[in-house]
Image (tube, rainbow, N blue to C red):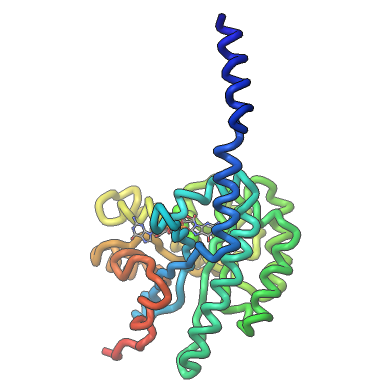
Length: 281
Ligand code: C2E
Ligand code: CA
Ligand code: CA
Ligand code: CA
């Protein structure tokens, strides 16, 4: 009876086009979102801890879903990676972020050009067309490669370190900057820091969260900043939420900080006020 029950289920599901229907619908929906302009970018400022001035932005993707409203990446990035749609999605992000850099520059060319960081998934890093995609976006919009930072996670680098090294060297040769994201959460060996042509180390938010309350987190953040500087990297703290975290990071000589203490990620329009330089004090 069990067996029959199962068969009946199978029959039923094939009659409805399942089991993969939900998945296919989801895939179709995300594909359409990418093609029809339902994705958008939010930007979070990165602040220079010495000057107090804005140094650039991290672009963070959102899905402005017609029924479900504004969706955070946690709602769709994993699925994008599993379904392969991360490649067209990632291509859209690269182009949109660079286009926004160019637009901001055009709208006030007396301002210093805007630096932008974008997140690159492990799958994109393995895509042989990544270099061409980045080059094309920069050329199309007339943005200097040195103004673009590609953030990759430790995990993306350690899965196949030799392949990752080749890709990073190709990207580095374009003149873009490279950052290790979520540093401290993966299992990167210090050897990679030495071998990989990295420019920035982004200390994971989980360590910043305990920075002023947990002596171990404080020690970890201090070591990350020292390690970054000892290997000629810039240290970036993410997830800064309080003034005490900010002063601790300043004392540790961390270079850049981003987090809700300054602002949540915002749309390009809402960010306009951030372009007005702050008065010197
Ligand atoms: P991430 O790269 O580590 O980005 C930082 C995340 O921390 C963002 O979440 C940001 O909104 C959040 N955040 C910033 N400041 C604070 C803070 O002070 N406190 C707290 N609690 N959170 C803060 P978001 O935008 O939801 O993005 C989540 C993740 O999704 C990103 O983590 C990144 O891994 C991924 N992601 C975002 N955009 C893209 C993209 O365009 N491509 C790819 N492949 N992944 C992306
Ligand atoms: Ca990031
Ligand atoms: Ca991060
Ligand atoms: Ca993260």
